[in-house]
Each structure stands twice: as structure tokens, then as C-alpha cells.
Image (cartoon, rainbow, N blue to C red):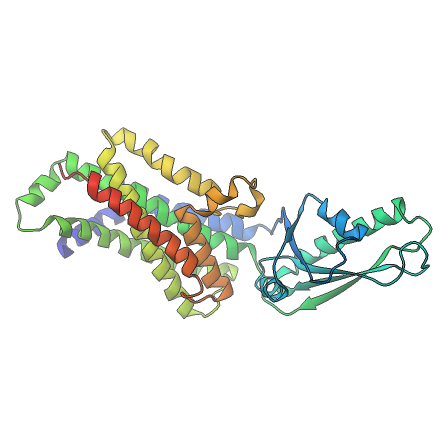
Length: 358
């Protein structure tokens, strides 16, 4: 088994396509996204309990297309704000009578954290624009319908690299697990190498384990390179330092094992080497685009989001981001872990039925 693993590992290192798709391609994306600024397309906010939901300000904010309202309890909203999951928390209260009181009838409180400091000015400007529009249309004789008060909570800054790097790491694992495994086992079967293996005392399971071990070692080294580049060059957040790195490598191992199952299936059902890329792209391309690799799933249409959230790559990306930026323990990411393990069970159940040795 170790001899097979060593030979396979040397073959991977000598393969230009393996180096390009596993290392160079993800690193190129990280460099591109790491050097560009953050460009938010959607602001997520929550409202404090007790907010006057009948006020014209609240109703007007609900109509803003680029504003998404998150409905959660107060403690969860505060936790999400400090972890960078939402951009701010608003509270609207009444200070006087809207029609008869000459003073400002409403007060709007905006709470943001260091994690959302980059989007706080945009959110503040959005609220001010709503207030100005209401002043002009509904209350032309008042100084203002509301007074906006802004307060900042301590927290970590959520940088673009904190979102992009886990997605690129998942991208590399998915690509290597599916394309690498599918091509290797198809070629081993077509070139009769597997037949020659059968003439030796090695058991079939050890052949698979040897090939899998080589890919696991190579991809974990690749993961270390990607994480190191993000941390030392772009300031990628590692909440618990090297402990977080080890947790990310553990998640990478699980993800790679699951993704290799797809490769085993494709190598078994492919009738020719030219049919492998189309079959592999059917699995990989939707996940590259829809599983939260390049942009949050929240920006997609509502009917499509449930489908995106159950993709195996989304489970892996979510777990990697929560561990790296939020410092979540493995127990706290039990949901994504269970999700990707369920995928693994389903995929390998199919693999055992369709895998061909000759």
C-alpha cells in the first residue's frame, strides 16, 4: 500500500495539470481577490425587540432592495453582529406624537461592530436617505422625522480574504478529489495496470487506500500552502492560531475523502477518457458557482438557496469559515459536519455498487 501511495504521490508531483488545478489555480484566485477591496452587494440587518414596526421608517426600510432583514432573538443578533454575519442592528422607538408633537417623533439607533465597520457607513447612509425621503414626502414642515444615533461594538474586521480563502480551499479539494481520482482510476484500468496489480499479493482495498493516501498527503500540503499565503500575506484570520490550522486540515481531510467518492463513481461509469470532464463538470461546476465559493448564497434567489445550502461543498465552506473567523469548535459546527458526512455515506454506498476493477 505504501509503495502504491509513494508512486502515486510522485506521479502527482510530475503532473502539470495536478499542480495547476490543485495549487496554482486556487492561489491565483486568492491573489486576485486578496488585492481587491470588499464590494458588498447586500446589507444584512436585524431589528431589536421592541422596535416600532408600525413606524413609516421601518416600513420604508423593508422596501429597500439591497437590505435584508434577519429575524433572530436579541442575543443571537448581537452574537452575529460581533462575528460579522450581519452588518448592523437597528432599533426604532417613538419619542413623541407623529402628527401633533413638534419635536422629532422617532429615534433610530444603529449598532455595528468592528467586523462590520467597512459597511457601517453604507448602512448609515441608507438609513439617512430613507429618513430624508420621508421628511420630504410626509413631514415637510418638521426638521426631521427621526434622529439617528450610531454606536460601535468591539469586534474583528471581516476582510474579503476571510470569505475567499476557505472557498478557494474547498474549490481545490473538490477539483482534486473528483478530477484526480476519476482520471487516475480510469487510466489504471484502461492501461491494465490494475490487472498487473492483481498478479501481486496486494489486496484490492490497499490499491485504493494507496492512491487515496497519496492524494490526501498532497492536498493537505496544498492546504497548508494556501492557508499560509492567506495568513502571512493578506492577514487571513486564524482565531486560535495553529489550533485553527489543524482544525481546518481535519475538515479538509473529511472533505477530500467525500469528494473522492464522486471521482470513483465517475471513473466507473465513464466509457472513455474524453467523457470524464463532462461528467465531472456536472458535479463540480454547480458547486463552484452556487455553493458559496465566490459569493454568499444570500445573494441568490430565494427559491435556489435551499438547494445551494445542501451541496457538500457548501457544508465544507461553511465549516471552514466558522472555524477560521469565528473560532467555532468542532462541536459548534456539528451541523455542516453531519451534512457532509451524510453525503459521504450516500456517495460511497453508490461507489461500492458501481465501482469496476476491469
